[in-house]
Length: 281
Image (cartoon, rainbow, N blue to C red; front, top):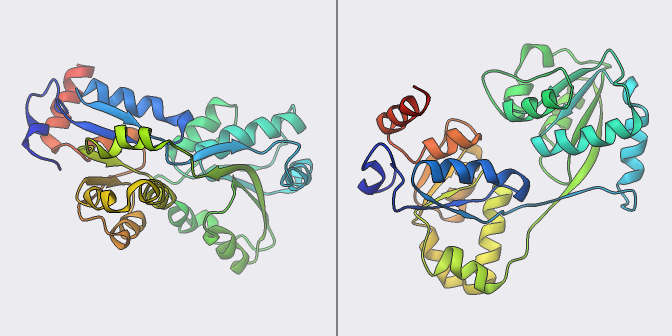
């Protein structure tokens, strides 16, 4: 939670507060709108740049091979909404009609929502939103001799692949986009971050945290110290641990990575519930 200004007035509980919103550019709008609806000032600064793989990229050879063989896989896992959107576009390129018999899986409800909108009958675990929750699901234990395709961006953790391999599955990666650290001018960083510190930072990945540190430190290393004392909202204990290791002092854990959960973590429970009921009632 932040200072008492955040709790003043149920109509505008974020009145007077600047909230840094850091999702990739394609996903930032909804969260900014939610912050505005609560009376706050959203400050959009995507910390990860998403670039789809094209036919000119080295990764395309592997994308093409995996997707031409799509009907040979038992399960296809999309790791994020970006993987769902970009992966579905590539699948549509090679398969105008989806092959049958595949179990389509998303990591997190937002990924499944995106897949559903694109015509995939997908599912995710109901008690979690990360790789760990999927791997602990009963249906993921007996995968011996199954072929599993993981559609993702470049880099990232190898936990799913390594765990499925240990359980006897054959696992392939299909990298459909690149995650890069964006570039900002010194003027932009000073205007959005340094000249007036945000009241809260919403960051959903460890990569976003390290990119923020890299971007600000390149402009003014000593000015980054002030951000360590700014309220930081993250969606998981794993990312919270990364934040603490980097030096952040005020880390708050949201109940999930979706926009409502991230923004809700800034507010006292009573104020959020009262505001939300008023909006829908």
